[in-house]
Image (cartoon, rainbow, N blue to C red; front, side, top):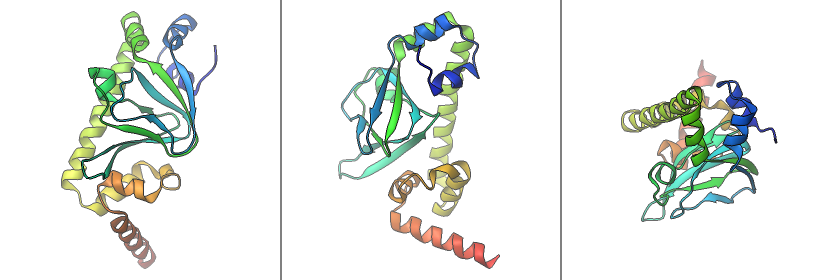
Length: 197
């Protein structure tokens, strides 16, 4: 059985046997995509979770005016799950696109559910991942509603310092709900404040 970063991630959190791992991966596959390539387009339905083995992706939607709104980033060791498709069997409203050359493990949701029924430890772990995702989105919504742009940016650089050199500034601005010009201004102000200290 091929060894994935995801295998290490799983086994560091859940005791699974070789048989259980083979069961989980029996319908999984690896997808390698170039920078700018779509892993999922709006209107598509997928039945798998994306685990980023290498590279970086973004999940976003496009409003009726053609403006992009970035929901999440994911880099090595992170998941992206299209909730519409995977949990509600509906076409996706979102696009998932590679920001750089990316290797993704597509984990079949049917196998995730089958293993959850067989292994209480895996079921708890799977639910914990979902709960953490919900918590992250709640905190993000609260921040977008109540924090100023500079505070949102400071939270971002504190939480994801490794993304600053990998993610284009326009994508970070979209994630923060501000224009690229506003983000440039905030960055200049923070540099000036740091120099004055």
